[in-house]
Amino acid sequence: MLRFLLVRIASAIPVLFILSVVTFAIIQAPPGDYADYIRSQLINQGGASYAQAEAQAQAYRVEHGLDKPMVVQYVNWIGGIVTRGDFGYSMFYNKPVADVVGERLPRTLLLALVCHIFASVLGIGFGIWAATRQYSWIDSTLSAISFLGMTVPRFLMALIIVYLLVFQFNVTEIGSFFSPQYGGAPWSWAKFVDLVSHVWPVVAIATFGGLAYNMRVMRGNLLDTLNAQYVETAKAKGLPGGAVVMRHAVPNALHPLVMYQGVVLPYMLTGEIETAIIFALPTVGPAIVGSMAIGDVYVTATFMMVLSATLIVGNIIADMLLALLDPRVRQFGGA
Image (cartoon, rainbow, N blue to C red; front, side, top):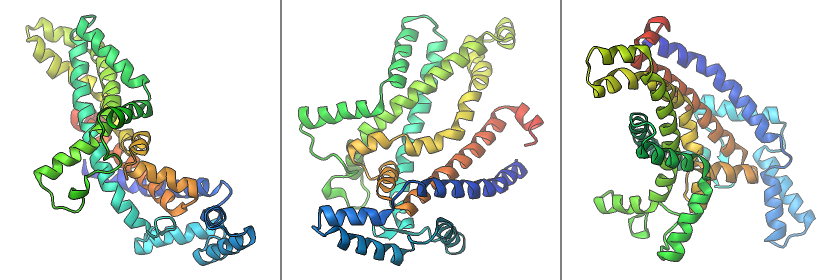
């Protein structure tokens, strides 16, 4: 297992390098840069003439190296990461990119992991419940919930919840993780309750969507597994129905969901984009969208590299979980 892990990590390095090149090129492909954003701000809000704004924008390009060819900008950026751990400077946030990522990534990961745990536990549990009661009213109800979770857009659910909170329940504190009195306060039970009261809509919406997918996949896989010959043999030997389902059928039905974990990490980070934008939460999703809109290239490139790294890490974790779950993978996969 250790050799398998080391080989996967070593093979991930050239993949990350290629992804960084492609990502940087795609980000730089559209016309315009952050200096153009500065020019438009000077004209629209500062009242400057076009010539004055263009002169200041050009001076900004020269000062921050935006006038250099794309290859030179990439070499400077990737060289700073490799040699100094420097991901560049955010022109919009006016601070190092590492600080921007450090502020938003931990809270986003924590929020996404909570949603993923809820969605996995509830989705798998409901999927088993529905499959073992096929065509009953329980199966029909859970299937309807799964259909709604996979078809109703998240932004629509977020808009409905915002409307209800603001116009029906007169909630005013939307767009932050904490109330003002708890912003810089040390952790306590009251602060935790305040955090839950602010983020529960995002958690509920993200959990609902993930729960629906997990439930649908688990139900379908478990129904196929329950009809397998080895399950029928276990039943014929007189094993209790619960033992047959949980010990023989469920572990094999989990394989597709375990492999799904390989792509769920970056999805967890970006899947809350619509909800986080509507609730104005300072997480990764709005930062990616906002930095792309104004040409803050190093913020966008760094966040995309983070997503690429999480995709690779997620696939390694999925392979290891699958090897632990299925002895056949360890035997024939060389792990």
